Length: 245
Image 1 (tube, rainbow, N blue to C red):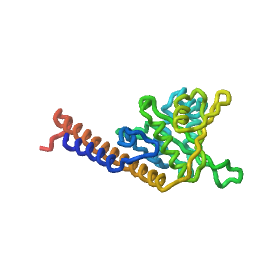
Image 2: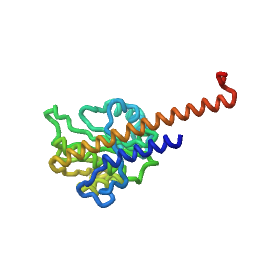
Image 3: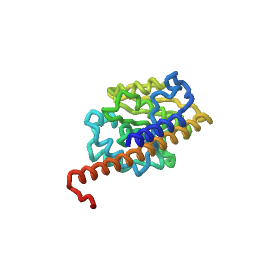
Image 4: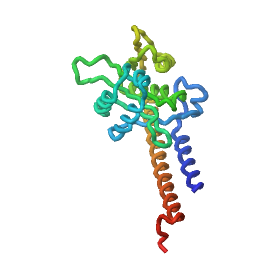
């Protein structure tokens, strides 16, 4: 059993080394060496209930920071039900138990409407309390910026409460301009045109996130099976199940 566990761990690390970015513009030495790599997975309609569970688990203060108001359960339900996975990009970070610990929504404008806003996309993010302080929000923001840039978007916008210091810090650190208006603030980051490097980076990060998720999923299935097998063996030893003899 220990050998199998070592194999899964080695496979996970090997996939991360193979898909690790060699260099990102503006990255420091730690980023270039791959330290603190955080695989991010693109989400689809099959993840809708995981998204709902993540958002419903936020407390009142966190909901206010995420939505700009104290969203009720019913309001979150409507928000999740209306997510447009074809138009927008939704990203997530999963832990080894496949819990959705960080979630980002990159909302594109409705380009079919004659009154559509200028070429900008809006970014929103939430991170569970136990996973904060690890840079997940900044990683999701960077991932969203690459996607928006490659989609021909000129600006990435964050609408946040002025009290949301963490989100505004992420925006300022990325080079966004922050304008306050009463209790609210808007951060706007100008995006450069897409390049071959930005498109390759998007592809590479997408494959990293998918590979990491599949390895975690397969590892979880294996250890769930081992756990069930151990329960059966324990039941046999304790006499609760027949031995078949």
